[in-house]
Length: 297
Image (cartoon, rainbow, N blue to C red; front, side):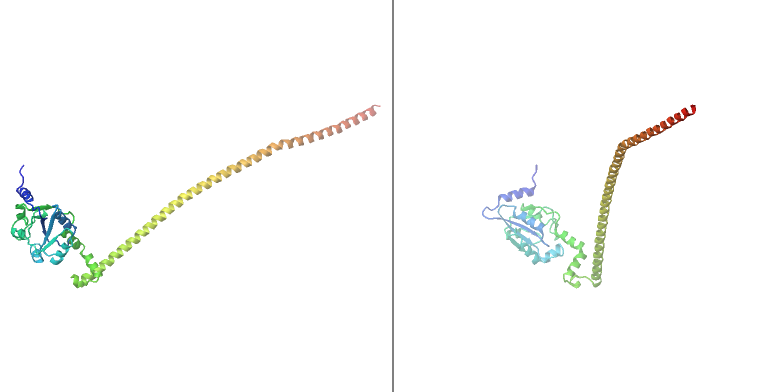
């Protein structure tokens, strides 16, 4: 299997590292709106060797605006941002756009650290800014941090431009400082007022809807309780009616059981009257017999 020439050169260079001093690693860039993606790449460069000294080159405004475009921060602000990164040992201002052997020798640079993607040489000196250091085996690859870059940050600001304009107007900046016309300023403020009104109406609608849901819930609970109370009342009423009916039936049965004794007493009195009548009628028959005897005589 063939080993790329760059890797062979790099391996040979590592064998030639000076044992009596730290390895001098160089990283360069624009570092506009310095962010944690920049810091991570510098951390990787610093940790590429156990004992290293990290030099960071930063291009000035003139070179940067010429080959890359306008920056948000000035070159002095970018230099100062790098000085406050804990991985950086030394900042080299006015760094060249393309690294040369003369620059490497001047700063005693052993390795150049950057991500491996080809970086187009806008100056026209070559296809890749790091083409030379890769060829001589002094290139150390670092990894980019996904999801963060200066271009991404600027895109977020551009995307929400109107909100940031209003934010700075509220903080005391004038429309002239922000480069905003009188009409645009008024339009932005009116639109913000309408948006706030819309949000307020929406919140009120949500509150009303929430109250309606609460009323519906309580209504359902009331209906369930009412059904349960009615069912309980009917059950108690039915039980009471049953007890009342049982009591009435028992009273009637009790009366019926005591009534035959009364009827017996009545029947005994009637029989006595019949005997008296019989006695009376017997007396009549005797008197009639007496009259018959007289007539016969």
